[in-house]
Image (spheres, one colour):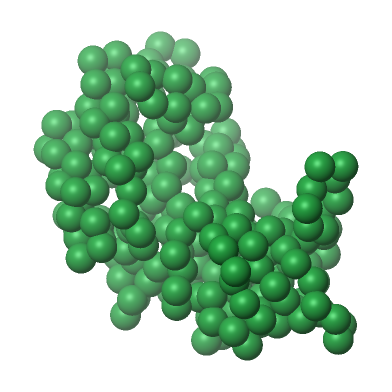
Length: 228
């Protein structure tokens, strides 16, 4: 998937709150939207090179979205909205063997007390899928979450209920290329890890994919082993 316009290089100065960044670009300070509520402490370091997409709109408070961070030479996509689109495109293109024959029937389906990400169908069967954005990698190990997430734990319980109606899966899209395997970040949020293991033991499918991130765009790269 290609970005809609050319990325603009900038230098991160500070992150005043979760969704706001202050950067230096062409010798001037600019404010930008950070489309990710995660902590990302290891990425949001002043002096880091970041890449922005220009975004204009009547109700916007900033003219740019922060999209990529250059972390020690590895490009990391921090836009938590992107994995849903990457996964949907990969499913529709038939390039993921785990969902071969399925296409996206609906986005953001509501099931019980949760709004999930994708409803897939192969004409006979359905699959409810929750997609999680992961940016944290330590020693080539991808970890989720990087901040406590009660919502994420609730989604795992919802997926267990969805098994009564067909397939249910959670997909972790690691938005960088330098991970070799995935596991839940129990040190950060043991409750989510417990919920994920409960879901897996109940029959919910758990997948993780790394991503090829470049200045032109991003695409799912390869499936990673999941260690629960």
